[in-house]
Image (cartoon, rainbow, N blue to C red; front, side):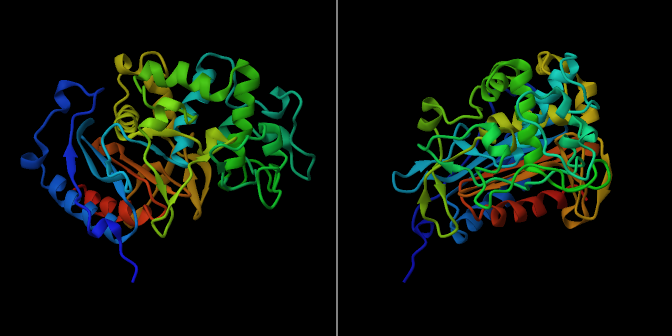
Length: 375
C-alpha cells in the first residue's frame, strides 16, 4: 500500500516578518487575521494529500506584507523544514521579474519598446516567414502579442552543460526541435510565447555584454534587497534550496535553463513577497532606482490585442480565476509550482511557492480562500 509520508510527519507553520519589510508590516497574524488560520489549516491538508512536501505563503494587505507562513518540508528525507529563506524555482513567474530588467534598459534609453527587435540583434535573426518580422517589438514580446512560437521549456537536469541561447532559439533544447519563429502576424493576436522571452534575453545580453543572470543580480535584485534571488543555482543557494518532487512525491533533480528569463528564476518567499509588494505599491525609496513607479504602472496595464486565451501587460498577466480579475503570474516546472496574484484596486496580494509538481492543487484553494475576503 502506498503511504503518503506527509501524513505521518509533523508539519509546522511559521509566521515571520520578512527582512525587507518596514515596521508597518508587523502584526500578530494568529490573533489579528482569521485568514491566516484558515490558510494554515488548508495548506497543511492540501500538502499532505497532494504529494507536495512544502509550501510558503505570503499575504499582502493594504500595500504591505502582512504575514508569511512556512509549512511542511523543504526536504522530506532529512526533515529540513520550509522557512521564509527556503529557495524555490518559480517557473514562469520568472517572466514578470525578467521584464523589470528589460524595462530598466528601456528607461535608460538603451532599448526601445516599439523598435524592431530583429534589427538590434547580431548573429542570430528571426527566420524568414510570410509574416513581417519588423513588427516584432519588445512591447509585443513582453505582452505575448508578437506572434512568436514556443510556449515553454522543460529545462535540463542540474549538472548537465547548458546549450547557448542561439542553440535554444534554433530548437536544440526542445525535444521536438521547435524553433523560435513567427507563427502569426505580430500585433494581431495574443499567443503565449516563452520563446519570445528567450529572444528578449538574447537582446539584453548582446546590448549589455553581460550574462543575463549577472545583469539581473547587479541591476535588479541587489538594489531591491533581494539577496536570495538568482537566475542561477549558485552553491550558496543550493544550501538553502528545497528539493523538487514530482507528481508522485518522488524527489527529482533541479532543472536548469538556458532560457532563464522565461523559466529559470530561483527565489524565496521573502524576496518574491517584497517584489510583489513593490508591484502593488512602488515606493521610490524602496525601488532604489531600479524602475520608476510610472514604468511599473505601465507594465500592469493591458496591451491589445487580448483574447479568450489570455491578456497581458508588460510581463504581467491578467488572470480571471473564479471571475475575479488579478494581475501577476503563475509558474509550473517539473517539481515546482508557484503563483503570484495581485489585486491592485485593494492593494492586496498573495504569493504561494510549492516544491511539488502538484502545487497548483495547493495554491488554487488558497487563492480561493483569499479572494473570498476581497469579493
